[in-house]
Length: 139
Image 1 (cartoon, rainbow, N blue to C red):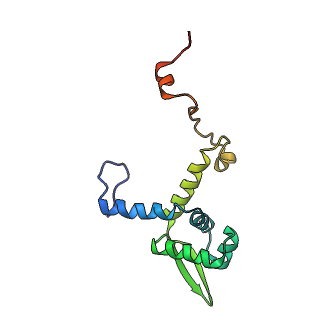
Image 2 (image 1 turned 90 degrees about the vertical axis):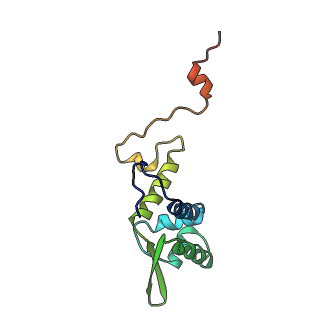
């Protein structure tokens, strides 16, 4: 079932509920860091634990949740289990989430530094919306 891309079709409740589960998995810093580490490579639990600075048993629990949510898949090799992202949609979702977060800061986002693309300039948040809409002036 495909919901379309332009918002012209209603999103079925079942698909919205599945999306909520995906976003719920992304609501944990460790899980986002694990997914980020897996964007371009396959890694074993111990390597991932080192990357995120957490104990391997804790990382294994997070990976189990990500696997149940179909965000990562496994490949056993000998006594190790290697993890990778389930598909390119997961990689894009994680990249876009991280890149969007970078836009919240005052600096040029890291992902724009070398690409020659000037990020959009946002309206300063210090002015209230009533001041902007009425052009408030002091007499």
